[in-house]
Image (cartoon, rainbow, N blue to C red):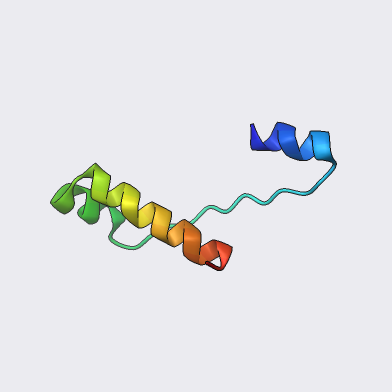
Length: 49
């Protein structure tokens, strides 16, 4: 969806692949909802927010 939007608006897009240390143990210990919260926080930090 984002790729199509960038193409339609003739803008660039970035894709980041990150390996978060100990992420599996966060999911295993606290559940996937907590893991999702961590991913959102990391994404916000990468966006500069």
